[in-house]
Amino acid sequence: MAEKEEKKRPIAEQPYWHPIAMLATIARHIDGMVEEDQEQLATLQEARTRPYFLDDYTVNHVENAFTAQREDFWVFEEQLRSFQAVQLTVKPLAEVARLQSQMARLRQINSGVLALAEELSKGTIEKQLAKSDFEPRLEALLRMANGEDPMKE
Image (cartoon, rainbow, N blue to C red; front, side, top):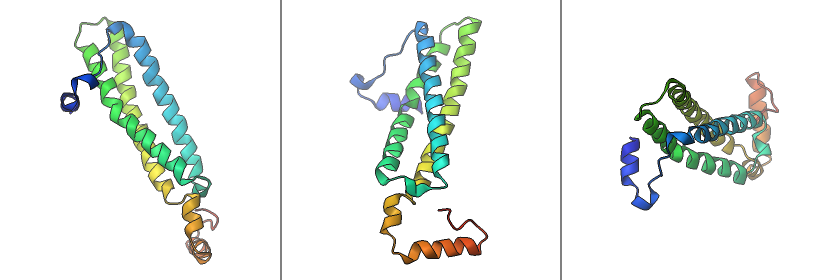
């Protein structure tokens, strides 16, 4: 799949494949993305109990940023495959394998962020303010009737 994506790109957009000497730099970049994405996921999970604290702009920004990030994953995955194509010693080979695992983890976290952002987009402050005075009260009563916290959104 990544090869097809690469072939569709004009020559000017083809990535530059780095030599194995850049492995540590690429590792820092991938590890940094995993760490930052985990932090973003944790922040959104905290907002889950109070989605009305978020506005449409913020949620849309998260969705756009993480969609763009996902579209670039293939570059890192292909770079790691290109490293595997050359004969590596044990240590660099193990690092490439670790980074491939990190990329799989990054895809999973990214998907989690996007799914949570979509969920949160339904309860932003703008969505709450657009409701009539009656709707939030009715929703709270329905949550109480179901044994849920009436203050939870």
